[in-house]
Image (tube, rainbow, N blue to C red; front, side, top):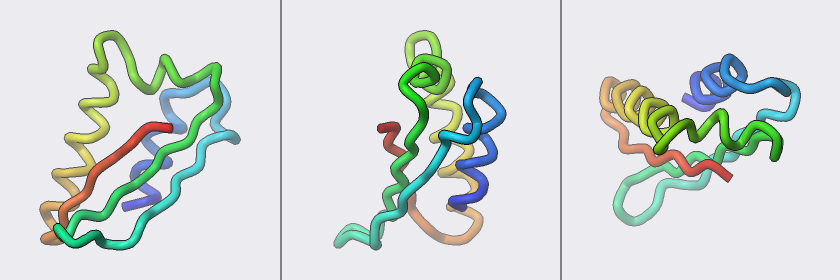
Length: 77
């Protein structure tokens, strides 16, 4: 899941070497939180106009997690 998130982000940004992701432990609600870190120059690219790209990334991650019976949340830092 972490690799999927990183690969999606690297395809969008201008500085793919700056893309990293951290994973939190499963919280009490059973949700795994992924924190995506990108360069300050690329934050707008990852969020997109009106948040459309960020929403698409979250949708793909939820769909992939659903196949593995997991719940995920993506935060862009």
